[in-house]
Length: 92
Image (cartoon, rainbow, N blue to C red):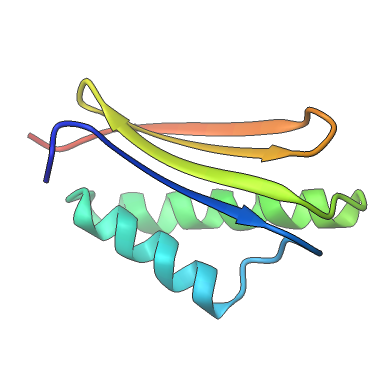
């Protein structure tokens, strides 16, 4: 895996973690080498953040997966400024 990468998605409409997004997010997390338990935990947190945004009527969001300096940062941001972040140390 490269030392740095950025993978970003822009979702229009009601942001739900549907099968396509679930597969993409899981694939990115697996490629980083995270343990299965860390992947499951991160996916659960991402689902909650997406559901909370949908429950509050947020329609458009951006999701970024960034790896740099040994960390994976996932940023979910909604139009209007609401933002959710989670970071994980990447395995050596």
